[in-house]
Structures are given as structure tokens and as C-alpha cells.
Image (cartoon, rainbow, N blue to C red; front, side, top):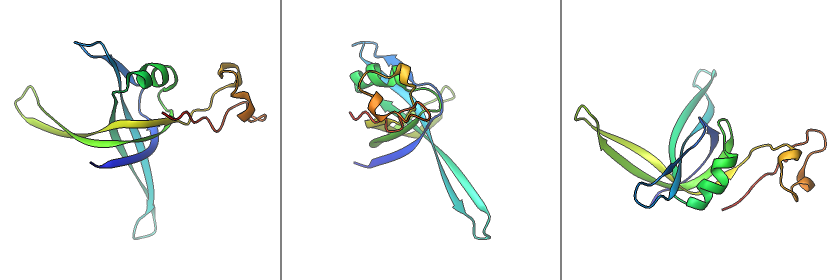
Length: 137
């Protein structure tokens, strides 16, 4: 199994989907990671890679991702890679890689008024944001 850890930003608000048979919820989202580098001629360059991610943990999807993860949220995700294949309407077979989320941490800044009690200790007095907002699962 291939394990991957990425840090990036959500490309859009996550989709929370319910399975047809069981009704269990899962989260689907895309994370963008940008790598900066120098070319051989010394000019700076950057490459952005998108990762399709799926979280099958119903509790995490419903109680953590749905209320707190928004477009532009900074996330750190750990999971394993799976191949995904499907046949399009035109009969062509398509291949894709997706990251099955095992652990996700949001690095959002939250205002003090919206933070639950007990978070106030880590709040920066200058900005009113919790800069160390890690919730492990």
C-alpha cells in the first residue's frame, strides 16, 4: 500500500454524499498542492498538483469536514492511494488516482467568537485567531 502525506488547500467546498443503500455519509474534495523550484537557468517556477480525496469515515465527514472545511482551507492529509477506473459515455476507459483519507487536519484560522470553549488559550491576542488549530482523528 502506498501512503501519502500532502499539505495543501481545498479547491472547493467538500461534497458530503450519502451512500444509496446504507445512507452512510462520505466526504469528497480536491486538494491543491503547489511546489516551488528553480529552473536550470535560475528562474523561479512552480507546479500545482491536484489530488482527488475521499473520506469514508462517517464521523469525520459529518462532524469535522462538513462544518469546518471550506474552499481555501489549509489541510494536511494522510492516506493511501487507489486506482480508479471508469468507462465514459463515449466508451473510452478512464484512469485516475485518488487519495483515501486516513487522517485529516485542518489548519484554519478561527475567530475567537466562533471557537468552542477551551480554544481561547491558544488564541493570538493580536489577530484573534487560533494559529495552532489541530484536531487529530
